[in-house]
Image (tube, rainbow, N blue to C red; front, side):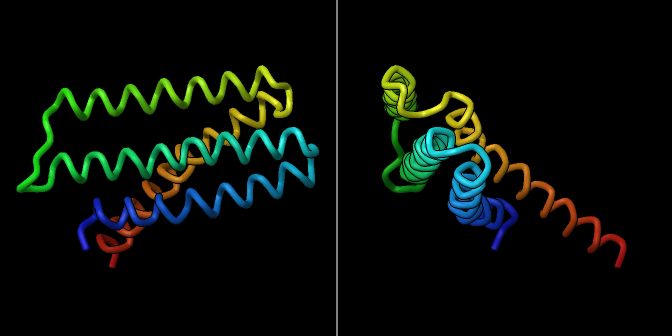
Length: 128
């Protein structure tokens, strides 16, 4: 398995683990509105990440290479849909905006953890 595949698999799994852990922590520490915000924000960004990975895999895997404009169009459609959902969630008042921000950050945290994990593997390999 290549380093890119390892990172992608780690991020995929870590997204869900962090989403559940952050939602539980939000519920225990800050209440239902914040926990719901974390859950909704994390779910939106995690689903977006999976859809982006699927779009790119389909666009870059022969023999069905997709055109650049179609990949960009799908990206912007997902972005606009996510923005609309986040706007409606905030407008409804059922979720806390800080919770949404924390939830949306789960993918960034997963990527950061995956990067640290790979750096550790590289440094341990060089040291040993």
